[in-house]
Length: 143
Image 1 (tube, rainbow, N blue to C red):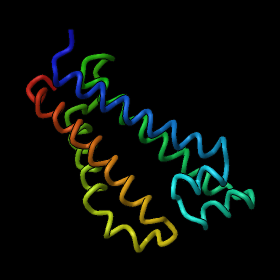
Image 2 (cartoon, rainbow, N blue to C red):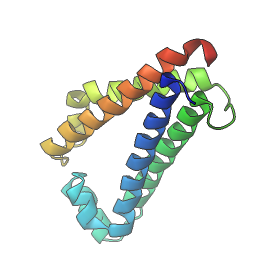
Image 3 (cartoon, rainbow, N blue to C red):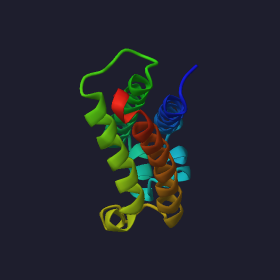
Image 4 (cartoon, one colour):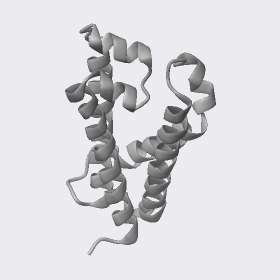
């Protein structure tokens, strides 16, 4: 039976994996999915034009999210210990929480993204970040 902290990290890993799969779905579905997810018209048009950049950016984001899921599973003890697990999980928490609270600073760099995108994605990042923080704090000595 996993401790409550380990369970939180498993939930965090699951949420990161779901986010990664949602990003991969954009690649599979194409421009309508990018629009639905609020990525902006410029990104959707680039997909329609057959540009490689949206796919590469989306693959990179998905890859990072899957690595983060692996670190959460490692911290939970579900998979073997990955290098620098404590440091990595601390950084993952900081990035998720930072992304959630700093969206107003990021908005100018991505003017095509909708307000719905910013509020929804920031709320999701906050939720995932808080779940990770709970798990990391609970398991700090064991990490």
